[in-house]
Image 1 (cartoon, rainbow, N blue to C red):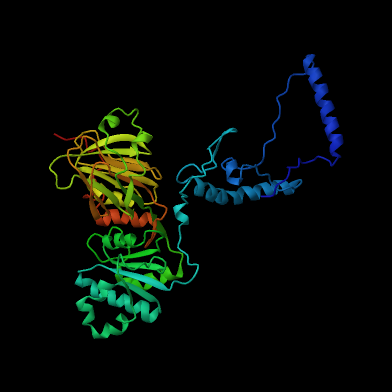
Image 2: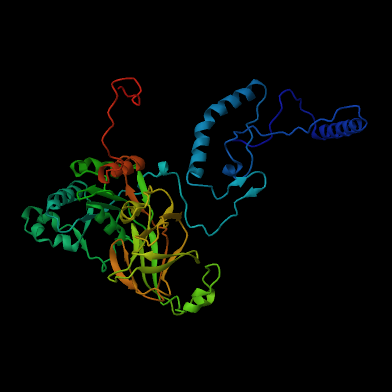
Length: 482
């Protein structure tokens, strides 16, 4: 909108100084008459800007917007036109800023506001605006195939032929996939096989070469694709050719049409948040007496030895971090810290720290609620806790969780990351977990809401029961006849 003062209809143009003088003299005379009791005291009139009440000031940088300058009927017409055209614009503005909580520049009343935080690491946008677009046409495609599954051999060949011969793309596959004996014995596929680029996990870095990832298999293929990219992840298109398929919304029967749509752009995307995990060896010194006397659960600064701490592993995790008791027959006993403050001790089989994507995996089996992937949160779920009141909790995304062995724990603990890289955690070790800055952009088949609820119904049979039959008689069913 245009800035500037709002002109009052019927007011003639006069010099500003004359208006100011007349206004000041009239106000003085009015005050004198009110003091003498000749005139009733009038309330002070407050000029308000003609703007929609549902558009806060902070959406426009904190300054009020005025309607364009018009006179007479033109001004009233402009007000009506603006009122008709505003709702969509204001709705987009409000929805984009308030869908997941207060906008960082939110104002509360005339004086209060949220303190600016320059250390913010996350920006959450309206999920409806998460659409795929290509700044340049994709050239390099990574195809991930489920290993040791002969039924995926023909789909893999069809997809590679389509990408190489029809789309003229550079296709990357894992070396052990090409070395499959069944694939090497196929002479008709040898010409395509010679054009494939191969890599080895842990040896070759392809993170800066891939434009699109296509997964053939179950949910494990998507988890494996996430583990290959510890930084920015290319868009992932997953075809359901596995057992469960909660994260794989596409059907392979129409792969040509679906791939063409993705290459054209404007496909819906779910940004699946990941966890940034650090395993630090020897950071927390074993001093049981100091731990038992700490006040308010805050870990003292002298309890941390930065020189002794050594980061042995740093990963990006898509589903969950699981800390369990391992082969020991004793209950595990670990301490859970949130932003440096002791929250609780977990006594049981272990604890699960999961993303919203992982809330439908191991956490759901342990009794946790299921969270949509676009909800910015971290879920903490105990595994068989030795307490009737220990319920799963959801904490805000961005907080730092730390898990350590309790001083009086009888045994060590074990930790795994999306079911991989399992290792032992001893006294003095710690696991630091927070929300990663690098989500996994998973391409939707329909949209991010329908795909998720469809997976709940099809894969987990959420709220599936026999339908209640309709009553044929309109009378009250509670009335029984003798």
